[in-house]
Image (cartoon, rainbow, N blue to C red; front, side, top):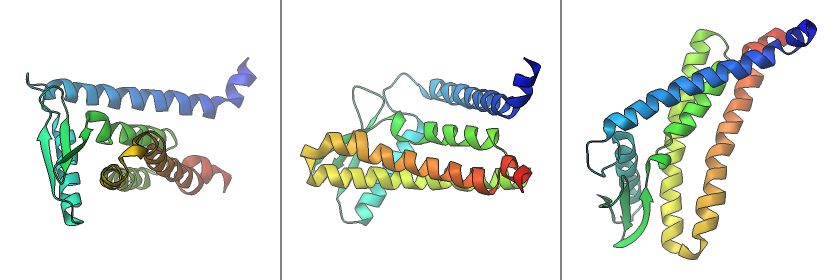
Length: 183
């Protein structure tokens, strides 16, 4: 049994570290979401920010856009050229994906400075790609509303999760302590 534990020690350490970091960050995010509830249905600050930045990007590419608080739920209504296209909900703000990304990077950490800057730059990249994803999804929904399911449930989650996967693989192969031990 001891040999088995020694053999799988790196795997066990990765899993425990990942679960601990993911759990702590998720709890912190849930506390933030709970603190954001003020008795109205307006979404939290991050979701509001993402919705408004998406609106600004859409306007910069020529789409007259409005973002309004949804009257019945904690989301923002995205209206392009007078057409209600979508809701921007808490799950659209990218925070949960960033938490997942950070948890993996810390579980496979490298040198502190490298890890810190990779987490920072990767999180910013995920945030920006998520904004672009919402903008492209909105344009797609505006022009091809009959493709809503494919756009929303397959293509655009694939883009964001695919990018996170590539960031993880780049990290493991280039910067993690696991790779440093093999050199």
